[in-house]
Image (cartoon, rainbow, N blue to C red):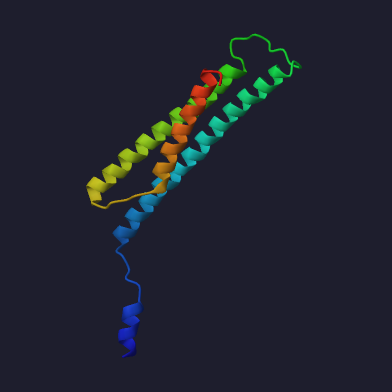
Length: 134
């Protein structure tokens, strides 16, 4: 009688192949989250530089030197780089998850892909704000 209770409550172990696939999916999630972190850093740094110099110019304490690459162009470059890097990482992530689904037949859903798309859209909004002087 006691043995039957143990069987009822004992966890069912997956095969090593199933665990390997799950670890692979999680590794792709961690990689995408690292790209999200990097892109978010680039986007916020670029926007911060833009807003800081915009504040300095408005206070009349600072006169910008006219060069080829000023604070606004630098900000556009940083935000653009962050958005492009995140978009490329998201596309690669989607392709890889789709490939693993086709090969192994396992469905995998993650919040990392949704977060990456959200950050990419917000980054595009900030890029538009900087380009349009908003």
